[in-house]
Length: 293
Image (cartoon, rainbow, N blue to C red):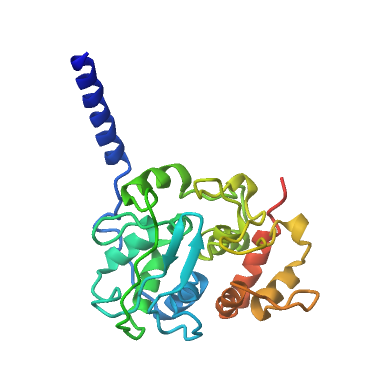
């Protein structure tokens, strides 16, 4: 009997070790950023498209150039607080290398090789382009440092076990596109902006009990964590807007019925209104592809 228990214990340890190895935090290759030359003007647009300020500005602030963090995100798993990502070397990311920042964005792995909680939308960002991330990193380094310490998350057991997030990533993230059909150049640009940079699915797609997005209900609208109501269904038949309607909304925050954007969309419009019309038209072209099936 003791021998059987020992064998079970050993097998369990081996399986656990294999599992931890498979789900260990992933980093970008050391030469991943080689050959890319940063463009600050494009970096500013990437910064807007990715909505960095929306989460990392101080609560109740509208200054997109200061990123002390502190905004609270209520979820079924606990309350998460956006960290300081200013250029401060002690409290922000000013002491990180370019590779460390890019790895955080595209792999969800911290400089000390820990998994980030998926409230940071790396599951969407991982579909992005390396050139855009290089431009973003360069732009982030131009922003003012802020010495506000990041606030600790309020997450209880077992959701605070970061090692388990490797399994979550394995099950619920996918670097491939959600819409995989052949697209025009404009539609493909819209897909990049919606599925990756703009991470629209993070709020507008329903989630399962583990917090993974139900991509078979892509952009169908979802419950708002910690609040009443749902985000809107963005699929073309349900939305019922024309391309011109979508562009106008993303530029002005006004719907075809002249209602104004509210809630988190106020910050989103503050970002999308900075994008060129060509990008807004690309977003519209993509959204009109998304059906209810």
